[in-house]
Length: 569
Image (cartoon, rainbow, N blue to C red):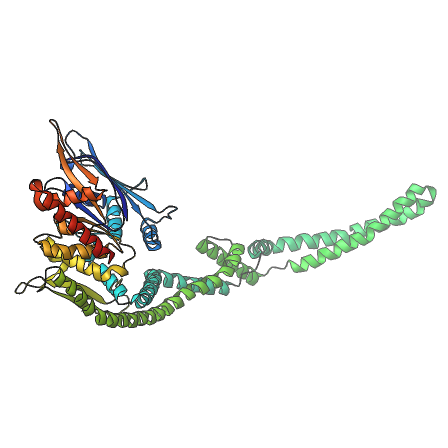
């Protein structure tokens, strides 16, 4: 509910602060005193467009602040979702500023927000009915929400919403996978080509360096064979070879070794060289045979090296790096194929979820069709009490045809029904959607009738504002209006600007709005009437104006007592 409204520098209002209460609150006062200005200030606070012309003469900025108390968990949850923040306290403080330059700013709990955010908060918390813009109840989506609450269809609505959310989720996944399908298929084909290409190459670790060395050996095979065979000959095979010379030296050393121990050591060392020389000669003979020229093998090695270098150029990786890269291709193909399979699977799941959503929408729609006429009929009974006995209120539901393709159109947020409340105010007049009814009085009374029926079904929008609900209404009907506003005040905070004392007498709280003038300035004031005497005086003023008498005061006192008895009973 709105606990406090503070207004500075709005036209005739210099600085006004009013503390409000729960229940039925009435604002009364003479015409032109500023009642509409205060409602206009509330409208600015709730996101209506403003103009620099509204700023009080001599001031640079107008400011409106409202403190809302979110006493219900549903309100706090709705506000937290809208503002994407948690609330540690129950207060929601809205501020709207408008400078003479035309610049507008908005704050929520001292945090700057867009003016559109104020509008969304206003639509969430407040119903405003009168000559100015009407909020929630004129919005077909909100009418549908209340119809579901009225008909106890919230579980069916929740089921549809869950199914619709699932369809949207699968749609997003399907769209994401579909958008990259061609690229993914190209990548999958490339992965498979590369895997086959590398598998055909039959790469082995450290292959290229080994082949390069082998190629060098093959190119120089004749020279290597000549060298190694020459070494073997010089060591052992030729006349005068090292082995032969070593044998002679060893024989002579043995002859002289008895003359000196050192010579014996020389003899031993010469003898030790013989097996090494023979072994080295054998090794060189073997190498000479190995280093035989092999043109076929050289050609084979050259081709293999060329292939490895071609792969290296193609992939930008060395052959050893390609071995590691090949190991990643299987996993990559598995992932890409999984995405392809997922696309097919999501398509199947999407179609199944879409069918379930359509079934839930049909079930919800049937339930709405059963209760829509009852809602209109119940509200129409109240219209008769409110001086519109010939009015006809109807609830028209138009069905949305969902396409067969689950990706074809947006998923409806609230089902396949489009609800429109239709009012025929008087016989012979055309039936009009409620949002297009021109008469502020008729619209306000229709809103009051609907609010009376739906009072128990809206835990979030607990402030209802009525302006000119008593337009073209006499005293007898004013009494009925007062009773219904009082009844609505038991579940909602009702703020009503009224000229009828019969309506004002039923208010739980009453304020008077006055225009006070001095030689220099004129200003609007608002004062709560805290005593019975003050309320009687205000009601007498509303009855007879300045010509009120003691008889008028007695009539006002009786009117106030009768209203109190009616509220108590």
